[in-house]
Image (tube, rainbow, N blue to C red; front, side, top):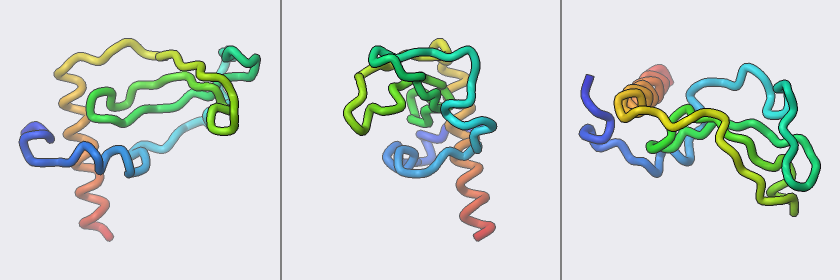
Length: 101
């Protein structure tokens, strides 16, 4: 499997595309709750940047509307091998979706 970076995929396209994998639960439907600095339940998201594909994190659910700056990783860092596999899979999923459309 060729590296997604060697095929010229654009990192910026990953940041503007929706997740290739739908959330199984909403960002606030996890347990046990993790509270952010302002006392609200932090939302759990999945990051799909080239450096952290599929890595989950907590962020204040009200961050865009004046909440706090709370941020914490759920998962530890991924290995370079796993990062390459996830990035290649991301590219293939979007390639197949474009072909289908």
